[in-house]
Length: 371
Ligand code: KG4
Ligand code: ZN
Image (cartoon, rainbow, N blue to C red):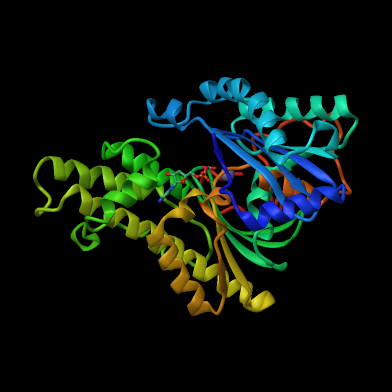
């Protein structure tokens, strides 16, 4: 099981904090392929953050299988919560509230986390919070950096690619979303086509280091478009065509590494172009501020470098939370509940497979809109 890295400064602060009897929130995350639990104090100190990944289970299938994921969450959740409480050095009686991801995500996993959180809240007589998983990502930078509202968020994961103006807890303005695949999905599906295994992002990044992005031409879907939406499914189709040519020795000597480098550059280009448009729109409304990147794809160095240059050009600060906070975790779920502590949810809350952060957002042109 993975945990947040040891930090002596945090550990000392943790010891002093517990003597003052702080409000402690238990967070639970189970919306995709990580079962996670965390204990976070009201001032944002993370006392424990545990993540049990199902990656090995799903790797054999080349992607997340929802039924298998739900069963794996059920198997792991008690142990993950027990470990988080033990590592935090507190007893269950010290927990003041319990928060679980209530959606969006794979419904079987969300049900497991929701039922567990409601059971703990009922047994202990403490408030229960249903947290929007996307809100967890959106507010996570405030756990590690003094990022003031409003700021612009680029959320790039396996399930989502969105640009959001974050005005405050519960107050989001969606500038753009993907019209089809998420950026991480483009990495994963392309890696599958190229025979590189799952998850695809890290495999493509490793191979791309040996390749030349200029040797294979790939499209830049929606680059220059006069809105902030994304599209990645055409890129995956183009990768399939180029890969077939490569296999048939009909690719002017380009290698698999060249194709990986080209794909990474194309995704980075699209993200940078759309993010720049969103920064300009945000700056017109609020002045230049901070661009936060969250989600698993933010771990990609080439993408980070490309977005860093774009942020500097637009006069924005760039904040990328550490990888353990960028990928799915329960500390961000506990924190999102702490940011709106006065409004707990009732036990009648029903898990929501779709749960947009900005329900009033205009849909992107075209088909198939994600939460
Ligand atoms: O945020 P995350 O851990 O889980 C959710 O999807 O919610 O993101 C996982 C995604 C996968 O699609 C994975 O391929 C991608 O993030 N990813 C990367 C890298 N590391 C993870 N993509 C590109 N480069 C990476 N180094
Ligand atoms: Zn996520």
